[in-house]
Length: 124
Image (cartoon, rainbow, N blue to C red; front, side, top):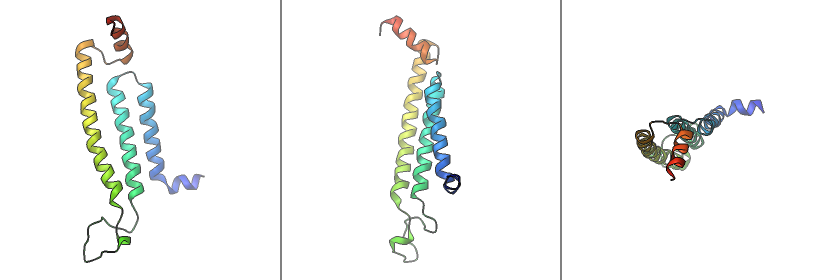
């Protein structure tokens, strides 16, 4: 089993990063730290997809020097998914940070427990 972990070190790193982000998301009370945990999880997924899409010895899917055999190029789908995911992740992070700023301006704290208590006091 140890040999498989070493041979697939990239996937192992992606899983460890995902775990770190997941536990950060679960255990932190600070909203900024939760957003950071979610971004770590996103990065782990992008790393995993990039590793799965890479094939050693092949090049980017750009026809060069007249080589048109499919076996000479990598699959472009994982790369496209990673680029799309990064764009969506940046947008979601911006939205989460803007909502966090609004919550801080209203409740003067970033602690999720304190915000929840104040919401219950307001009757919302």
